[in-house]
Length: 251
Ligand SMILES: C[S@@+](CC[C@H](N)C(=O)[O-])C[C@H]1O[C@@H](n2cnc3c(N)ncnc32)[C@H](O)[C@@H]1O
Image 1 (cartoon, helix red, strand yellow):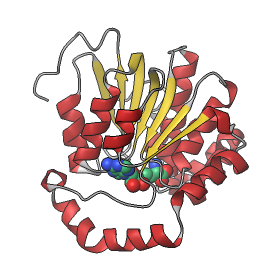
Image 2 (cartoon, protein in one colour):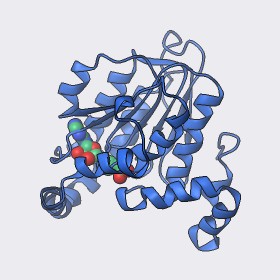
Image 3 (spheres, helix red, strand yellow):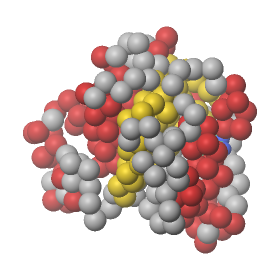
Image 4 (tube, helix red, strand yellow):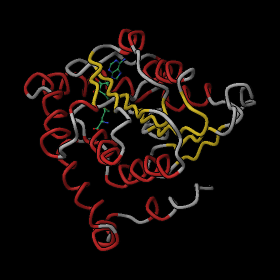
């Protein structure tokens, strides 16, 4: 398996072999950020590191555009993007979520969806009622990390409605973390006309949710490189004039 240069190290270093301790020595700033976002996320530390590295790469390469997260929940991964954007006040962070309800999986989501529907959705819905996620996301971004409110846009609602209302800029970086085939498919369709040349997408659920993988594989254009990470996500880097280059052949 091939990884993009620079990110091969982290996915292979298991927690028990000292990933966190090593990171605290190598990058205290990133280690503090992981600690601050821990209580606000479902995403493991190594995958947040991938997000951080890919988002910073966009700034280093001066790819123009705003940052987007689709699937925010309590804001942990959005917090990683907010921290990266602290030095870039001209870029907005757009956050899309229903915050407080969950869509139903469909047959495209495979066997995992059935278990999810029966056991986990009722439990998750009652948790969302007891502890609403949007105030947590705002607290992390604005109070804990000090990210400017004026640089954040909260798009609250079902994606089919909020994507239609989007009136923002083009997009340089997108984090997609919404599990289901239909949600990922609609996110990629929404992003297609907006993504800048050289943009990157990190799709959190590529190897863990079969529907998310199917939606990404169906969408992937020819001029894109998809790097599956062993811990679940895929990094998708768009190259050159990717829109006019057409679709990938059968993968
Ligand atoms: C796995 S959680 C996101 C986790 C988050 N990135 C973190 O750091 O923990 C997925 C979120 O996507 C939202 N979601 C999924 N499909 C959606 C849709 N069609 N419209 C709106 N929100 C959706 C869910 O409500 C949920 O909050």
